[in-house]
Image (cartoon, rainbow over all chains, first blue to last red; front, top):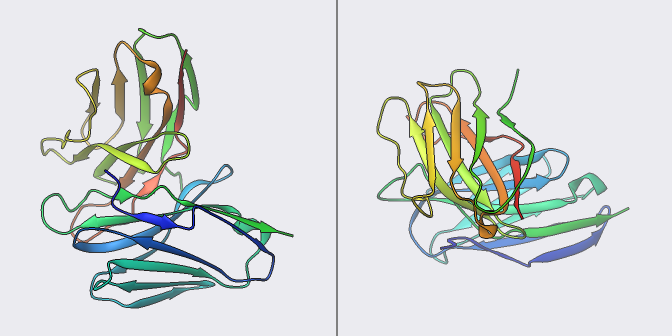
Length: 113
Length: 115
């Protein structure tokens, strides 16, 4: 079953604008990760945020995590056409087999030039 | 350095045939994972190998699916008597020794189409 659920399912913005994607999950986690997938480069790891962290930055990416609400957001600032891709959140659940990642269905981001 | 490679990149087969998919992990990575991604969906965990430990096969959808790994190198995923619902992209990933949470590095995938 899907753990992470991304919202929105699809997002279309103009180059230069910011893009925000959200992820909700159901069970306790060790960490939450965001991945990008496009036809050119396959599935690429973007950023990992641990359950004891609230915010993390990497270049134009900003990730927040609210464990009380079981939700995370990914913000891409100053978007570029090359950011066009599907973005997935994946959770590593606490307890049990903590090496498994459970992926959501993804948000399709289109950045128009 | 070389990333995770998978072959073939595309495979078209007839219903009922067996297929074998191959994954070459990044050299030195002891953990290897197989996932399945159906069209428009996220990734489903299939199986996990870590060193010489018994693999975690809990994600395999049926006994038609099996996977092997030789030591810390190549892995093959075999699907017997393929069905149309097996059509998907099969992704392999590898990561370093599981001491702390490690980033999984994904291969380009094998797109399987069962006619």
